[in-house]
Amino acid sequence: MRVLSVVGARPQFVKLAPIARAMRGRAEHLIAHTGQHYDHNMSGAFFSDLGIPEPDVNLGIGSGKHGEQTGAMLAGLEKIIEDTAPDWVLVYGDTNSTVAAALAAVKLHVRVAHLEAGLRSFNRRMPEEHNRVLTDHAADLLLAPTQVAMDHLATEGLAARGVLVGDVMTDVLFETRDKVAAAPLSLSVPVEDGEYYVATIHRPDNTDDPERLRAIVAGMAKVGKPVVLLAHPRLRHLAEKHGITLDQGSVELSEPVGYPDLVNAVQHSAGVLTDSGGLQKEAFLLRVPCTTIRPETEWVETVELGWNVLVNTDFAALPEIVERTPPPPTDAAPYGTGTAAQAAVDALLSA
Ligand code: UD1
Image (cartoon, rainbow, N blue to C red):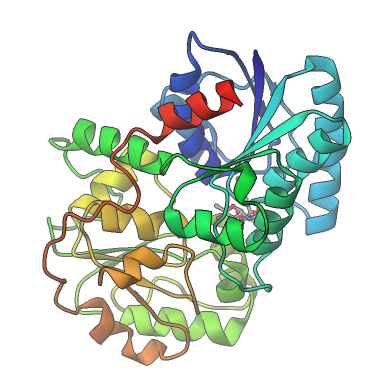
């Protein structure tokens, strides 16, 4: 059995790590990188830190408008799929690389498996929401991380293709957490254990409207402890374009960090402030309170269990919300216990 994994953006490299390991000795596993992310700290660092084999091919597509970027991927991936003739194409998450690979494969009558299927924000403004819905409907096998995701698939008439495997991000997070447990903090700004927050902002809805971005940064600046802002290139470019100073008040600006450093930084922080999907869940799994700057979340369990609070307009209230008392401990495990990659590979190889 030959499986071609297609990845391109940072969160996909994290999901690929446990899958690549679980594939070893069980299938011929090829990796295609679209090149959507290309900076070392957005791409190469993840492969080396997480022990992922070098991609067999890198299309080097880079950045661009949605149609331009997705179209270039589609053309490039079609050729790769023809050349490598896989039995399955495995796609991850919800980026433009995901939908391009799913579409390229389905047109060539190659079976598609979607890892992290069934997530929905029901927000049609998000590029990720178009990508997920289109990918799920194109795919033959839907590997779902949660029961809520399985329920969404059923609502859309896709239940027969769904398999609940758990969340592979739990696998890689737990393993990394244990590895870095004793490592010193390696943030570029000096902070004391438990006396800082970790922040990331990169969603177009937050970065592209200057007034909204200005208000978010102003709210973060008034938080009572340092807020280490790990600035995605999109955020830096747009803040600069709109003349918004990011490192104001409590905000301490940093480059994005690799995965082990991120896990270590979150683990030792007082809380997380983000619009990232993955980070909301990582905060919960590390039992660190999270504040999410979005109108909704796909990871509803984090909110229901009291570990995540959504803030969409009242950014002046950020200090009070971010500095709230954490909820009582819980041993709830809606994202599984760290065995999802094995379950996903089992489901794929027996489908
Ligand atoms: C993409 C995904 C998003 C995911 C995020 C993780 C889509 C639609 N979005 O968003 O779901 O959460 O990745 O980071 O696929 N840039 C660089 N260097 C890089 C990568 C990006 O400078 O290595 C800059 C470019 O100016 C680019 C911008 O960041 O225009 C946005 O990159 P892009 O890949 O289009 O989307 P992301 O915002 O990263």
